[in-house]
Image (tube, rainbow, N blue to C red; front, side, top):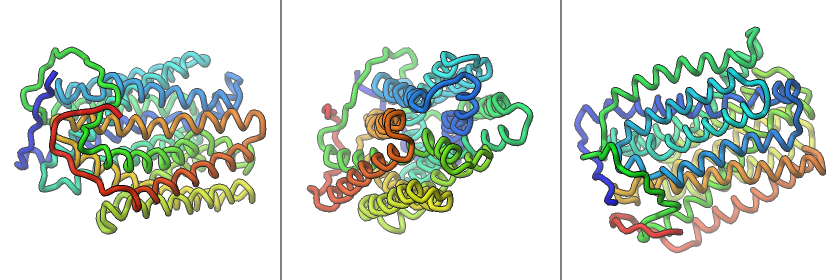
Length: 411
């Protein structure tokens, strides 16, 4: 199979399209984190352990990774728009599962479907935003794509925490609101210009696994290591931080819990806005260094039982994650050949979402045996080591080679 070429015309039609594509991206990603402040309510209603909270969360990441491996390059062939519409359908179906929820099976179904939506969006929506902007606006488009990703993830818990705390329908209002947003996003996605030239609408699905053009392996490895470490921090906040805030710090206001989780994603978006000023190649190691400081603050909050330290750690760690994430995605997006861009970006997100899932399941297992505080300290220590190594490799490793070819090789 030879993927279709992507359009790269920098005309006004394309420039006007990329903010709309970013908005669709943000709405879809918001749905994936809506349940974050609600896990405590589900625990009391259904009855399950802290380990099960992280397993339910990880099911989402497993679905993301599976979809990326199976269909990560599909939008390169059939076009970005059909894949975006499919993602919106999965997102709506996920919300329906939560509205029908009466036990763990519905939670798992909702997480699987939201993971499928995120898996489709990660590659296709990022590529669509970059291509709709055209080469003259590639810097703005890279920020729009990463900000839509992180901003959407952050708005999910902020929205659901507020609605759960201040409306009479804590477990249904967030998902009804999101269904309305998805409907609007679906209409917008349908109206977006197609950026893939000569898309083949009935093309066979041909799973690529993790395939990266051979000439950009150096770029991919250093970018992926930094993304793994940063996403591990995000996984900690979206899966475990609400439980820590409630059970250790005594914070039971769901709006506050949602705001704490939102702070790490807001800081990530702010960090992304600084990447161009710092410079992409310097932002990668600098982001890893700031991430290490944020993780140390999170560990300190666990020791001191301090909500302000936890928020400070979220802001500092999120800023570092944003700096390194945007730099990593920009390096990968620019180095990838146009015909393989969707698939290469999807492979990048496979590594990132592995970072958001496997470590937090380990935290859940350790929390069952050692307690939440001890598990969190072990987790932060391990990620500090990883982030330090990723930053050092980005400085001391071999210089990255740019893309431009079309041969993909597995890594």
